[in-house]
Length: 66
Length: 256
Image 1 (cartoon, each protein chain N blue to C red):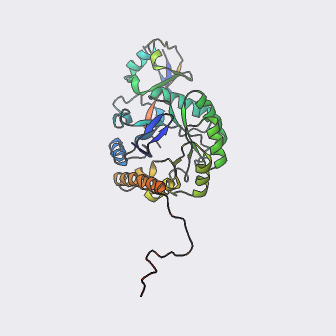
Image 2 (cartoon, chains in turn yellow, blue):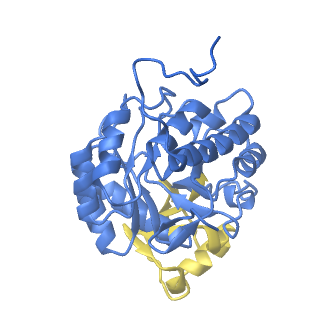
Image 3 (cartoon, each protein chain N blue to C red):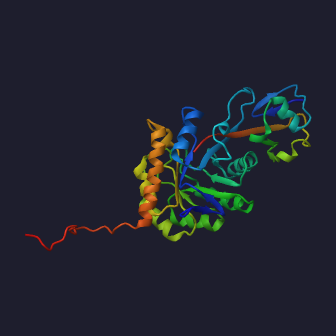
């Protein structure tokens, strides 16, 4: 499956759900927020949220700022 | 503790709120914040590094159990972007707090107050505790209060400019006319600027560059801590009126 994550095309994604994708990418869910096709996904829904070929994701976290 | 700042039922133990941008590294960020005594710490929302899994995270250094994390919408120029960042921030964090910025101009980073007002209303209805960064305009401050802001955050001067309190009289009018807490945000240069804001009666001061950009950020953080305390105490003590001519401090009686 191909996904666009943070502006980059990622090929050969094996994950079927958002929870699996974060595991595949080595990202701890606790400190990020995820948007799929412009929709913010609740953390409690990660395990059941299915991903489809061509989905556009944004994965964000907090950085230094004023 | 007496004289505690309380907003929407949340108790704030310090009236100095600080940003986490522009530090040399996370370690310096953590030390400066510790020295400042702040318990509100602002952060920005940005893309996670998905290629470098070992990259460290700000929250490894700023413990969300110890500090209140206040995400901002810095870099947003439209209402749509500000709403998007706010909703992401809420999901990434642990609270409904949002420091709302809708920027209108790249060079001055002045707020687009029309967009700001619209976004404040929408987010307040969604249950956010909205802290809008705005101009030192008393009418806009009132409109933001009416739209559901939790506090109003007028700028002292442009972000990162270090010019200090450019319009104390407008701030005074805002303080006199708005019932919400007033937090000066942006433009502070040094400790005396913070003291002036607090002496005017502001409820808190939010700053970042004045500490992060100082030659010794840790020492400046400590200076800011004292400035907030001194300014607040002076405000509560009640300053003497300004007069054009002298009044002798020593008695006239008994002069030879």
